[in-house]
Image 1 (cartoon, rainbow, N blue to C red):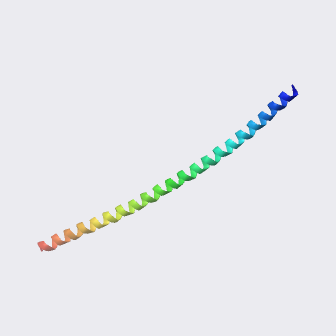
Image 2 (cartoon, one colour; image 1 turned 180 degrees about the horizontal axis):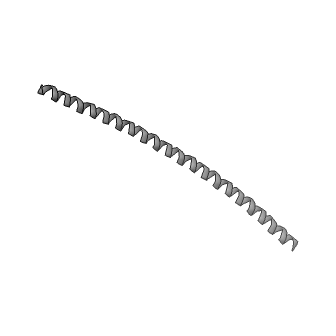
Image 3 (cartoon, rainbow, N blue to C red; image 1 turned 90 degrees about the horizontal axis):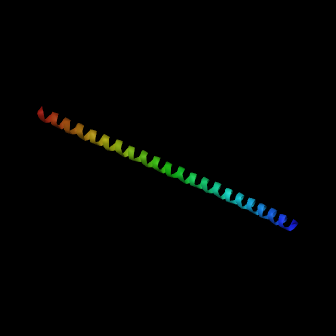
Length: 78
């Protein structure tokens, strides 16, 4: 009976060690995924800022063209 009990204790310790390794692996995987998600979010934020800047520049260009057309139209009536 002592041999059986010793065998059960060894299995229990092996299982405990295995579960700890799995736990560490899951933790590190989760941290890696979080870092990747944060990087993706930053890339999206940067792209949004870039597109907003392009939009503002295009809007300004259109405004200047509109103003130039209006001034040209006003000058031709004078």
